[in-house]
Image 1 (spheres, helix red, strand yellow):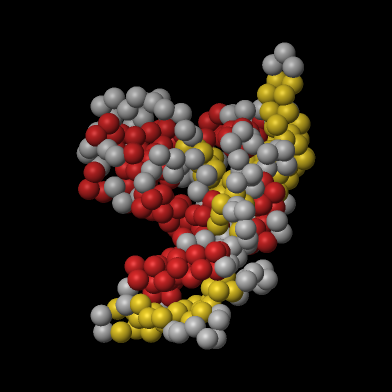
Image 2: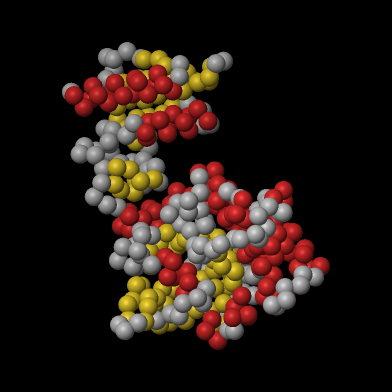
Length: 354
């Protein structure tokens, strides 16, 4: 279980079991305890079919729990009216809808429905909330555009703005970065993290972007293939082996050194040392080495080190000097990343053949 730093919980679950009741009860997961409060940003990750969407829908009150309790701002969710629940939790789910002729302003204004009722007449406070939400996601220049005319990323930001305008303590989002390109995914994570930090809301999203979840979320919720739930700091779940147990497959594994997934080769990968000032050049040299299947040394994995690369900044860009682990081998120089890649590939080939 995790607790917010403020100690005031917007969302809690105790002994929660999730699933469906039909002719036969189907339980997906049980024994779930969690808590979110002001400023918390949580990411829910797990393999397909592990129950992420079902958990979010249960936490938002869209699906009844099999057992246990979910509370919003201290009140058991099943006792809240739909109207009261919508004042405490704003949701963005993956359900597709026909935007028709609705503009960005129209969609965001729907977020004020819990306060305006069926007539949806916006007062000054409502207009201020709508304008603030549109500004928070950077859609001010598109406020009059129809949703159907927007890109997927812009449309997703409009739906997030609708949730912000709803002015709830809790935001729940199911796969908000699905189908978006890389820059748009990063932007969505930035927006949601900033909302939690600046407004004191609690934000939880499910995602398959594990790298972004590890970078941006302060709390990680993990559901594995056996539907077991764990919660904690991303670093704790990664280094404890929980991430690997949840995602590792026949051809890939979670690598603790890089914090990313790597394919499993027949032979254990080799390591290479990187020497030079921290910065852009060293960072991209590390990425190049990892792309070639090398592990940047220093991770304590006991791998065979092929040598080291020294990096120096020249007038035309970085300069690289490759020193083999063989002291008799000459130092090889490279004036570009392409040349460095060629030298490293040759070094790997020599070691593999030898």
